Image (tube, rainbow over the protein chains, first blue to last red):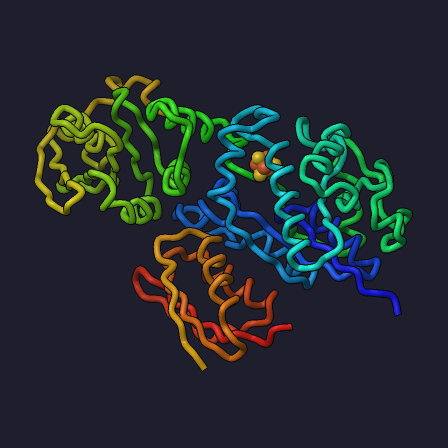
Length: 347
Length: 77
Ligand code: SF4
């Protein structure tokens, strides 16, 4: 009997990795999925925070893919190790702060370590040549295989026919003719293959797979680095950048303003880390103060808090100001008129 | 049979799933695990994770702010 070969597939939750894994399973290989959680993944997060998103089906797309395929999925927390990828990408950034090429190399390398540890034979990704501007050109395919150390144990079933034969093909574990030669940006071949396999309702990510491809998010992250004078972050920083309105009225003060109930509840979890305020006389948001909280900053923040409350047109709003030790006091302020808030305060 | 509790409050998905996964790795078949969470996303994600790994969700309890999911660890393969 021939030995059962085993492969791990990088599952992002999108269609391509679903199809790539399926194409290999069709050839009798045992496949398990691996999904890396960088902290920036669009997956799973904001959907649970914002009230308005609660009506939409909440699902983790990578888990959904695993269920469709009937395979195990290992979700790996790489938040800490990934920081170096974001902060010092050797191959630079894409359009925003997305270090796509370094990110791919990093993830394939992690998958390589995983297959060594678990005695698997090779790695599958859903990459397609020419699909995305930066990370999926033919040249970058070689870079990912080389720099990750995966070499010819890295198989891209959707474009395998356009690339040199990999080890599993040379050894006869995979039949090259039963893989594909997709290239370019068209999604039609993938959609046709999905239809052939009967996959429906798959996720269709618009930009990339993470917040780092988002302009506004990248602006907020740059701002964080600039004001701290250091390019660094921790997990709470990157979660908070996904939530609320961010305003910087002074170089040394940033406000995070909850936009609705779900966000206010989430921000409440940070009450002990930040001086925070909320309107007492009117309905309004929870606001966290990040930075200098001298008397002028408190006054300014309270007027802005009042501005985002239901009392925005009232002559006066009472705001509850809380310090990190749980002491609170009331402050009556005049809400800041909209035309006194310069557009560049909004990050 | 052991019952362990993990505190995944104030973590957003998929971190509660990852904490569950790590805790299950240290369990034996038949052990019970209680995961206490605040992100409503877990109501979908933890059962989905259990389905793909062959563990059983015994109960999901929801109070005002917290969700507790009880899992029975399935057979290892
Ligand atoms: S979009 Fe984000 S997760 Fe996807 S490859 Fe680029 S940096 Fe990595």
